[in-house]
Amino acid sequence: MTSDEEELLRRAIALAAEARAGGNPPFGSLLAGPDGTVLAEERNSSLTDRDITAHPELKLARWAGRELDPATAAATTMYTSCQPCGMCAGAIARSGLGRVVYALSGDQLDELKPPGTTFTDPPSAGPALYAEARVPVEGYYR
Ligand SMILES: [Zn+2]
Image 1: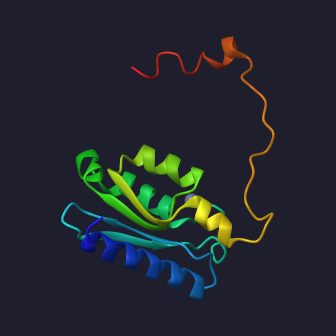
Image 2: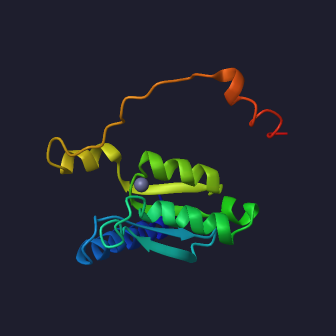
């Protein structure tokens, strides 16, 4: 990682501190162009917005999907204070962002949390009703 990239990552960490100071979970992210220009910044606002999806990475992925053409999105890098969670990783993949650089890993984050505070997936069932469920999908992806 270059010193310029470390500076962008430090800005993401500063955004995390700002999120915490504002009463939210301590996570921040930014999106930078290929020359390191900051295109957008976000802080976690899941508590003040009462929105469990208000992660900074998801907000930036949604912004990129709305505001950037695919080639521009692919040339960006997201700098984020922590490795994106599964929800955000899915949105980042769909937004076509080019790269993600993070400070804390998900495992390092979990080590900083009290025991029993990590998220677990609920029980699920499926696949089922394939013949019926395939009807609205078949032929869509061409
Ligand atoms: Zn997330």
